[in-house]
Amino acid sequence: MKIVFCSSEVFPFAKTGGLADVCGSLPIVLEKIGLEVMIVLPAYRAVGQGNHGIEKVSQRISRTKLGNIYIYFIENELYYDRDGLYGDRSGDHPDNIERFSYYCSETLAWLKQLDFQPDVIHCHDWQSALIPVYLKEKYGRDGFYANTKTVLTIHNLAFQGIFPGDQYAKLGLSEKLFTPQGFEFYGKVNLLKAGIIYSDRVTTVSPQYAKEVQTKKFGCGLEGVLKERYDGVVGILNGLDRDVWNPQTDRLIAKRYSINDFADAKLINKTRLQKELGLKVGKDIPLFGFVGRLSHQKGIDLIIESARELVKMNAQLVVLGLGENQYEDQLKGLVSSYPRNVTAHFDFNDPLGHRIYAGSDFFLMPSRFEPCGLTQMIGLYYGAIPIVYKTGGLVDTVKPFNALHGGGNGFVFTRYTKASFVNAIKNALAVFKQEEKLDHVRRNALHADFSWANSARKYQDIYNNVMQQ
Image (tube, rainbow, N blue to C red):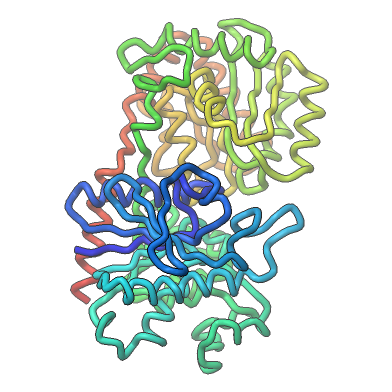
């Protein structure tokens, strides 16, 4: 079975978030279970800056390998030789509709030129959502693609590729498609909406999120379109690369450990992290970590609002991430006021991220909505107990710890308020003070298994089903 992955991000070539991690890991696992996989990605400036062994194969195409898989890059200096995948400090690139429609159309043209006849083209998010449209509208009578099917995975419904209505003409499609049954969305162009309508199958990155996107609360205006699909929306939980995130083999942390010897090692990692970041050193000081985007979605504002409560409880807070200036300024204020309890680092520092997971007692992830989430999974793998809001993939991965019966691997709050969040933190601190219970919940966390193998089989089933339609 031949599968083409089309994504605007693939690690290690181009990344702004979890989409890159998924599209850099899942294809490798699919290839290992017997599928023939290819990846197609825009040739951003960032791609050329890495040491990836890229070679030219035609005037507008270059390639390299990711494991045993060829990854092809669609070149266009005008569109892709610039800072930022989607925008810069001044905002989104104003020509994004042209940049990604070019990527979609050139991908289909290149596959035909290469004579690689895919059984399924697996598209990810709005940036590749035009491929199912072009496949049916431009190649509908082309025998080369007669049996090719499409799967569209929604990683975050909040990002839909919405543009002014007068830019529709740039897509090179009939005006007849700019209707409420097609691209039109309150007078604007919505690329993801069209992809949902035209794709042969729609999936999301967790079972819970598949349910949520069909509700008004989380549907971002597309809940009706998603509910109208005759075959429903399938949720498949993202996996996590254990070769990268594994405290037993992680060379970036102070002391490696497993489920059999974590107690002393966690303390060593915690002490080293406290010293490194200038925090007060102490076994009995609970350490809370956050690694992620400093954004409203991720709940960083809720963490900031609750930070003083944490300090009053003699706790410490470590923040690592990039995001909105207002949050950076507020965190800098907290660091200035509580230098021995709060520390914040505004960059993409992967080694420090590993040390935060290994050294933290608890991991904060109060996302307002979360399609899947990877950082809470990493927290579980490293015994940094997650504290999360009951939403999306967090529901599928973090189960409330029951101090009486010993089940569960984290702490969950169900009302999105500061009071509810702080109450979950207090529940966590109550367990922290009881070493036996703390070891128990950590052991539950370290038992977590989010390997890609299970998810890859489910995607293989999706491909098989869609090919039979």
